Amino acid sequence: MSQDTFLARQPIVDGKHNLIGYELLFRSSATANAADLQDSYRAGLNVMTSTLFDMGTEWLLKGKLAFI
Image (cartoon, rainbow, N blue to C red):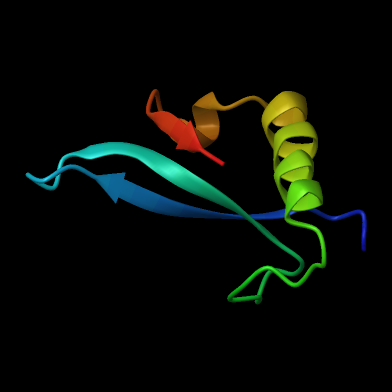
């Protein structure tokens, strides 16, 4: 796996289409449409450590919830 981390952010809305948060998904490249890995635990860990802890969340979530 490369050292670069790519993150997909998918909106989660309620029944009235109000944004409540984002599902955060690991991607192996900037053009990948799906995760390409053998261990889903590693994908979640990569998202949390490489992105959320190192870079913070305000730029990504704007105060909304994160679902990993």
